[in-house]
Image 1 (cartoon, rainbow, N blue to C red):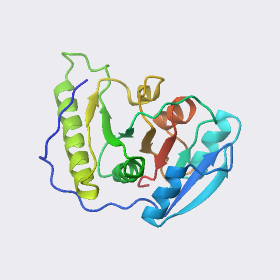
Image 2 (image 1 turned 120 degrees about the vertical axis):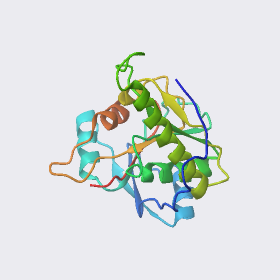
Image 3 (image 1 turned 90 degrees about the horizontal axis):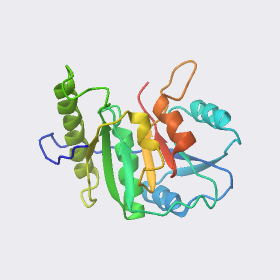
Length: 214
């Protein structure tokens, strides 16, 4: 893994989350932090019962493309809060909403934001293109830090460049109170990508899928 913090990227413009948040849960209760976040951002909350099977949950998430969707884990899942909101960022500005949602959640949770960019291990140490991939990853994280500094300067930001496939991020080793990533794009038929599928089915914490451009 690699870590770097800099202010090389230009300051980002203020970014706003989606107008409403859809909470997919097996129980009708809305998490307290979601209520605080929606009051702070003047947004509404919509409850969507979580289907029982993973396949049906993915179909429901796909049908909600263009909205911010929080997938809540089962009650009593044993997750221990760690004071971290992880934001998986592939590229910017298409993932700007991911950072906006992560900043808002981290503010009400009083947590740090950890913007993460992944470079697959399939790039060996001497692979052609590895240097460019790492440089691009650092540039993406620099831009993410700049956006977070503009949107929520009071937050602690800990950027991380990880050597793994993006969908591997969501395993049991993920140390986060919340994972925020880009949701499905508007397309016909709508579908959830590999990272989103892995997150919805395997992440050990709640998952918030932010809207992405079509």
